[in-house]
Length: 298
Image (cartoon, rainbow, N blue to C red; front, side, top):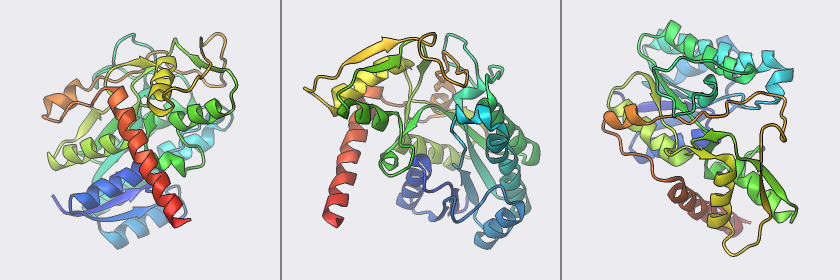
């Protein structure tokens, strides 16, 4: 396996961690954010990727505004579907390995953690577009690695426009208003640095196909919020209330149970993901370090 890697979407929560993890392992790594590479422009993708000639391309770019996608499905499909075709074609021309990231939203509601062999059934425009991306990668490449994940959160969420669920909860807590979070939707929130590390592990083992790398134990968004406040605001009184899908309507239908099974990942010899409470402690430690560095630089 070559030691030259490129990360598309390097400005996001996952992309930033991929760049960090790859460089830590000694890879010569280049990162492109949305301002440096427009993946919807086929000619630009071909030119930019060829100029770097990487042995591995990680595509962490995505349109992930799930509710907005219902009003602008074409925009979601172009980024999450057609643009993956552009990247796959560029990789095929260079005989480069492609690692593409997908989502638990390609599923509906099984009531148990999904495995890689479960049939897909997206419930909205976002999920459809992400499934299209998987299919394009598989159509144009013989051995792509597709990593499905769920509810990614990482320290880079402190500086991205949309943040992540942890930062949203902290922001709401600062408002001193009651917070309502759905209790009847389950997922497997995933800490970005650990996702990046497990993904590079898969690459270094020469794996291909679809592999799930979720946060581990399924949890409701309400109980996830409880863990956030316990880890991030210990001793602070936060008025948190459980609500339901019926009471909290959104533009997009979401799978009520979309947690991912990591059994295949673990069977390949990778370390299991830690409990979410432990991942949150890692997040808040990293968050504090980021804030300290920012303060020293200010």
